[in-house]
Image (tube, rainbow, N blue to C red):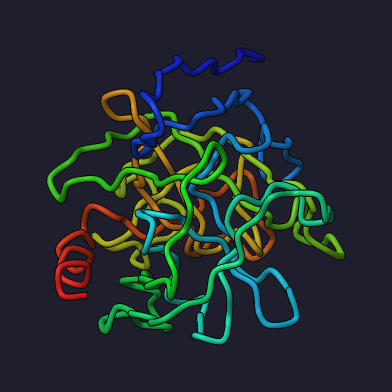
Length: 263
């Protein structure tokens, strides 16, 4: 199989940037992977952000869900001394029009457990809003009752390792198409570790890897990319025959809505 996944074009009106509709449209080949992956088209995943410490080291990904908020994984351990970098594609370039955004508050889900990796979600309130543009905009959030069935072809992005034993992460943003699995199917690989606040994808020659954590798993709904998962955990060797595990955003939406409404 070598089909090309071509995404339909949706016009942005005026200067309004709707959620989940990139101004620069992504093209994802169906058998690509982040492990041994392919470069994304610059600016085509405009909600993808890099979380960096004060030395500029990229340690996790995240997703813009509005001008003021980023969602990432709780296990990333983000602090207010870290920064959110938006509009980045090539981390080895000094020529990009990036936005380095300070973090005002970190809201880690209080039910997160490092032992079971349940409820692996953190919300970051930005100190100053991101400026939306052709290369910076938000992903859509799902409703708690949205259904994304097994077999749905989705996409994940990140600057994680392209091989588990690679000495460093890639400079350029990587992308991959990968199918969702049912939790019943995923339990064949991971057993009772899989719970209702997790969703699995991959086991198809595709995998997320170290450095992708906190980044997005997105699926199309009504013509817009919607955040279905947050890169959470998986094979220690980034096996492409074992599914990666993501925080299930639909199951965590009540908490997300509670935090956004109160802050």
